[in-house]
Amino acid sequence: MAKLRATEPKLAEALDYYHLPLSRQLDKGVRQLEIDIFADPDGGRYAAPKGEAWARAAGERTGFDPAAMAMPGFKVLHIPDVDYLSTCATLVRCLREVDRWSRAHPKHLPIMITINAADLSSGRPGITVPLPLDDKHLLDALDAEIRTVLPGRRLIIPDEVRGTSASLRDAVRRGGWPTLAAARGRIYIALDVRDAVSNVYRDGHPSLAGRAMFGWYPEDQPEAAIQIVQDPVAGGDTIRRWVREGMIVRTRTDANTVEARGNDHTKKRAALASGAQAVSTDYYPGAPDPLGLKFVVTLPGGAMARCNPLRLIGACRLTS
Image (cartoon, rainbow, N blue to C red; front, top):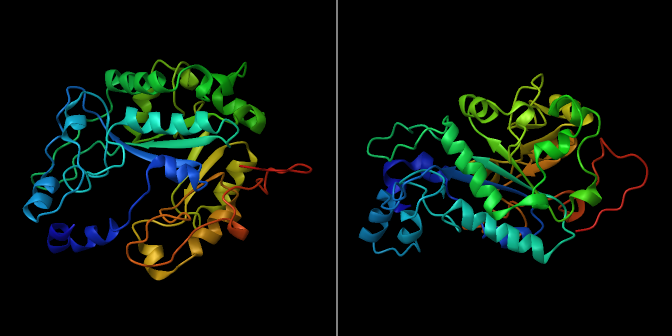
């Protein structure tokens, strides 16, 4: 981080936050996780990050695991060579950690995992260029890794939600999502990628038939079931409309430490008022606070979950 502060101070400021291991986040009540992945089918593509060399030169010990990064399979990191450390180095390790926690807490509220892939070059000189994910074989391999760890009904998948409806979009508008009782103890995954990758993911899989993940598609497309809105202030009305129509929406309360540094809860208030089912933050209760900002995001009263005020019909009792 010292090297980054000297060369790219704005980026260093944006990255100056930390996360607990996934199982500890779940212990804190977090039920929406984000995992950043990079394809590495041959292994070793990210096994010698420049940031690790900088850290060693400065006498720092990071806990980086080169052996895990040398193995074939999807890797978990934020920015190649720069923000390359993760509490679980591979996608399989991350999913296994979530699965172990889930099996130990079988009545938990459904866990949403957003899989994000920044699969194009950052343009920074000397930085490892990712493999583009608009490749059917890589996306099939991604599904296969997920199903290896989360087989059968461990996952809520598009086929289950679509049921007998003509499309996934039609299904969610007609109440196709499983009930909370049926979703407890289970996991569902949303693929958050650029349009070209999303299009390859659904090619040959109308309404994501046979796929392990949901995607992010325009609302008029047959695959539309989950939407992502980065700014709940500007997008609040759209979020509310989508939630009422049966979509699941993920939004966020903060990004790049900006709101935390300014103690700005504007996006938090907008996100909670929007009715979005999944609200992301880097500042959940118990999250590391290296800067001493004391910025914490919860629902009113310190809760981590509630019955959705836009979808509530009759009495609602929510636990875990």
